[in-house]
Length: 341
Image (cartoon, rainbow, N blue to C red; front, side):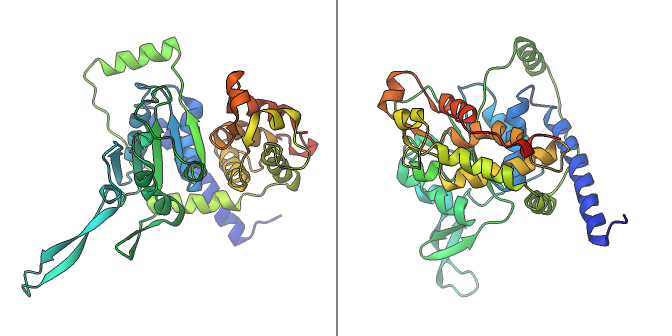
């Protein structure tokens, strides 16, 4: 059967998508060693227009990873170091009074803050008070900021990639659940294997100049985001993703016993949306044109881990959201039609 002109165009975009993704991965690997799942989840976040948190102990290259991706994609990148004395205006920008040289009159001029970039690294986001953290909310949700009653649109693509340190609690301000829910993923970065660590030490203790080849630009990223959204999903797989999220809610209809025992609040509606959107991107990245249950299960951890709020009983028994997600995957029946081709 001969393809229509529209189908041929879509096929060309898909082929270019795979070629460019392979090129991006090759460029990122010039700096980043290992962390295959972490890099994949960051790319999924970018290809779906999602914002993500990267959680890990100091020294695991969280900041380096985000900066490297921004360089490879040739996107405008700004780093905001979150501290207890950081104010909302330090992020969004502020209006100042300035003298107009041509007329001599004083006028109000808006000076843009670091939020006006394509990729924002919110470094150690949990080190600043909620008032300042909330300065990111409108930017993340609406793609704009409002200062002194004036709304300023942020250039697309726009991402907030935040980092946080899970081991230091003193002097930190946990993100409110409402703000956490706006992050697509909570990506956990772990220690490297021994061989990978040797490779990193070898690379970073010699003189080494790395140059990146040109990859996709901002408009092409937006084109790929549209491509991801066009990806079809079987009804059974869609239902499975929704059932996983619903099963995590203790207030839902007939939740599993362990959910009622250990969870205060389960995954939100956004969790179902991000599961499907992320699964579409993951399938395409892996060269498949159908979303499988495997994609949903793989992304359940980064999507759910910051949305499932456990109670004191869970804390006292050493049960965290990772354990809950594992048990949810075991408890919710898998549709036979959703298995990978």
